[in-house]
Length: 303
Image 1 (cartoon, rainbow, N blue to C red):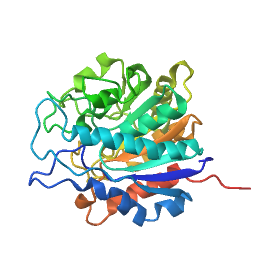
Image 2 (cartoon, one colour):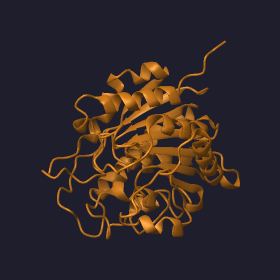
Image 3 (spheres, rainbow, N blue to C red):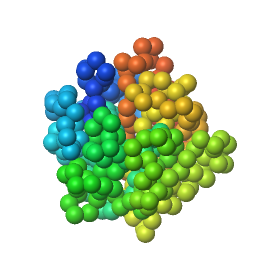
Image 4 (cartoon, rainbow, N blue to C red):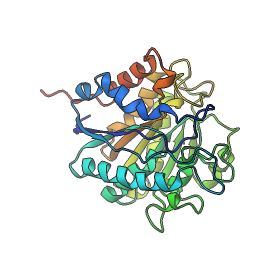
């Protein structure tokens, strides 16, 4: 990485449904756990602190809208303001979440900086549900759909009349959730759907990255965002997620696939979501994520 890096914590669980016992999920602890493993020092990054979310409100499933919709809306704008600070000063923004709905605030900031933007959405799930089809009503399960303006929710219209990202400038990479609500609607929405379940070698993974890059930089756009859900990794390497899917990428494979995206000068930042420290008692998942980010975003050596 030739640009300076700014770390921003997005310790939000408001975009997820609670655990089965009714408690709020602990993905909000991810930023502090990853920082404790020395991530900022390894990246020589400036740390812009955390953007605190509003309190969790919708413990009961609401009708016709996402859980905590007003709170997610307000939080997206707050997070967008903090990410904008990083981008204005020429930093590559590394946003440590938190649930997948944090991508909305990141895209809001990216649009302010670069105008129309692209999105590489790296996730085991399509996150293309609607309030009517989402099983637990979480904004996280709708995040990609909201980003491309799907549905009447105010979360789908954070940027006004146009969506945060035009569907034909979005690519979802690594999903393996054909059973999930909305998964069958991804292709019909003009989103590039890149599976990685049968992709293995460096050349194939680089090809996936190249296809994604061509799509998300269509028509000469000046910037794009990368969103990575930790559950895109194989559960053998990353069991500390709320909805693990069989298969997936191993850390080195994910690194190979992400490197061409991150190294492109039009990449504005990367958000990481849904790592749950409560499901990672030995912190092996945290080690995998910190090591991956440290290699992926390693500062360029000065000669």
